[in-house]
Amino acid sequence: MEARSKPIEVWFSMIEEGQIKLPRFQRHEAWRPAQIAGLFENILQVPSLPLGVLLVLEVGDREIFLSRSIVGAPQLNVKPSMQLLDGQQRMTALWRSLTDNYEDLKVFVRLRMPIADTVTDDERDDNEPQSMIEIEKRWERKGIRQPIWADDYVACIERGLAPISIFRPGSAGEISFKSWRDELRAGGAYSDDIGDLAGELRKRVLTYTLPFLSLPVGTTRETALDVFINMNTSASPLKDYDIVVAQVEEGVGESLHDMVQNLLQSAPAAKDYGRIEDIILSVGALLLDKAPLKKTYLEDDFGAGLASVWSKVVAGMERGIQFLSDEALFNEKTLPSDVAVYLTCALWAIAADLTLDQEGNARSLIRKVLWRACFTDRYGKTSATRAYADFRLLRATIEGAGDGSPCELFNEALFPLPNIDEMKIAGWPGRKDRLPRAILATSLRRKAQDFADGSPISRSNVSARELDHLYSCGFLNVDRDDPLANRAINCALITSLTNRNKSAAPPSSYVSDRARAANLGEDTVRWRLATHLIPYAELVGDNYQAFLDARARLVERDMKALCEGTEPTT
Image (cartoon, rainbow, N blue to C red; front, top):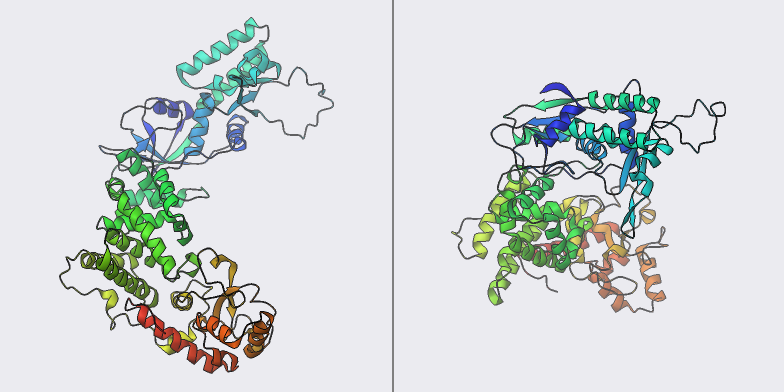
């Protein structure tokens, strides 16, 4: 990596000639007016202050990233000699301000105090910083750009201001500076002091140097991105998705952002399972017969490939998200495994057009995949490559083209289901741990009616429910963070109304109180508890260890059925 510097005048010449551009994955400008003003304050004060180091990638015979011009710059169809990896906001602010390219604001430099200013030098506080930069908002009224004075050089100088665009580098800037000076003379508003100060400030802008680090020709995509991410100071670091956005827009002329918004119209709940962008990339990669890895997303043709299978991605997301809901996996907070989401959606993309028995067989297979993904540690390590290997075999099975090769996800010897003892000590499902959340999801699978109002769990009401200790910490006489109480088997997802005022009461007492307050008979209470896989007799028996044993057996029974792809019975 080489460190160099160039004056603003040279940077502008490169922008005008299309020799420096942005990689298309760069997000668009985001600076606020105060940040733009601060940039020029640093340049114009004496001595000038640094703006930070830019990062560029030298371009050889071929661009490793698709490029786009800086906003407002000439849209030239030429290959750049450099791509600006880091420093977009600074360079864009310089370019747009000095070329007067902003639609909603205009940047001015203060050359003197306004004529109307009645504060004398004696009255002015010398310690009060005098800003050299002012920014005016622009708007239209009846087709006329406001404020009108902002486009009148004489009216501006009466306010002590000159547009910073008169400091633009190059021949266009020289013409602008001369025009400004001539108009002030014609309006009787010019003075040598104003002209000398403006000339000095313009020189300061033109010669101000911006240091940069350059990555040489031959730098790989992965290396360039790693350096970019490590140096980038943005609050929103670059994601793989940003690369693909640019690829899709360049390759097929469509906006991936618009495509995703259309998808969310038909599958709005998709956003409840984490970053929808990550889900889409993973599903798309699998459908393209590729592993859902960063290396895949950085391939030149991945964006075009994603666009080519987009209709399948949409179909898979629609069917897959609904299937997850049907299986009582409602959102990210109840999700045991991220892989379960994209693998399920990718498999439904293959099965989306099946009907009758074929669809039924596919549904059973996908249920088996989903729940084994939740209950085994198959996807605990190298999850992307393992999911890809399994998907290829599962896809062939659904399409009727399988050769009988076993899917490792179903290998009981390598990836066994948890036993009762493991389930009894599994932790609290509020933490992002696979087994506790798999146990919770299984306990919701029978529609988990609320203890108080009897409403079944659903996507629409899951956010109103809370994780509750069936045997409270107070009753067990332990702290809130004690592992003895914080177990998935001791947890139920119920409404806040039910989850109140239990204190140290034994389960038999609060269950009885709840039934009495709601005018419920024992059979109704027993039934509602059963929909959570909660054994009534062992709960009200006030024996914690007996309760853990009994409920773990109920969860195990349903787990085994689901992991075979069947509906639990009884």
